[in-house]
Length: 114
Length: 109
Image 1 (cartoon, one colour):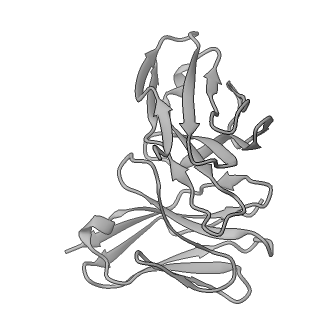
Image 2 (cartoon, helix red, strand yellow):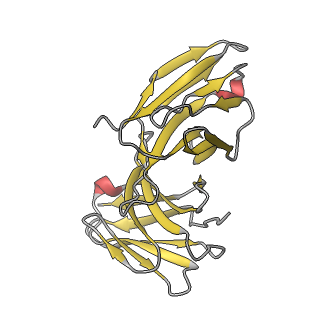
């Protein structure tokens, strides 16, 4: 298993540009999450999904959109990039309801909006 | 949503036990307590989780009070490599996973 794979690892955007952060997992996990982490701060939940076709807002959803058309993929879309979205983004997944519920994280995407 | 409260920072001498407290006084009966740690800007690493009973694995022990309003993560013999930010979080049954600010643990020689 590759685990949770995020692409790209680094990206620089200009203000107003749009992009999609990709996240895929091959562990048949039902729950998936997107977090952002600003320098020196904790992780903030952007969106999460408890299954294909189901998404819900987290703590800081403004400026982002998500979709979950398959169990494996959970892309995060930034429509109009702003400097306030400069952050490290982590995708995570978990097999909720299993006997060993571990949250697996991707390696992160470092995004700069200039 | 259950929220957690942790001290901002703690120090521990190398080789000693590190005891990291967490308050989750609003936790519901079917919500799990999880502990993760993050070293530098890497993705958080799973340590341990529990519901009611105390738990132990190769990394740590988790002590949950009988009323489940607080818990303590114990690293039995802290090493310099255990220096990290430790997060205590509660998984709500609806799926939401909220991280707090965590405890920055410094293990000193």
